[in-house]
Figure: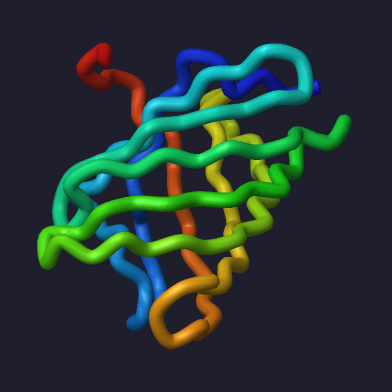
Length: 118
């Protein structure tokens, strides 16, 4: 099983209705199949996600955040991992807002080697 514990990710690309961008950093933690993360940066003031990790590393998650406009946003996401040649992870994500306009999108986030601890 892939471990997400103490890994950090940054957005590489996102659909137009998404709010996460290259300035957003995700700090992941994992205990068994339970995965959590906090995230902030760019348009995101403060965000959190909770997920269940399948044996293949796929994440079934729910997320919420406050954006710079002060709006609380919520959503659902499925993230499929790709192991890169250097051992880092890239996540291919399909998401849907459960607040706002309810639109769907796709994003890619990639593990970064160095990130500030929380």
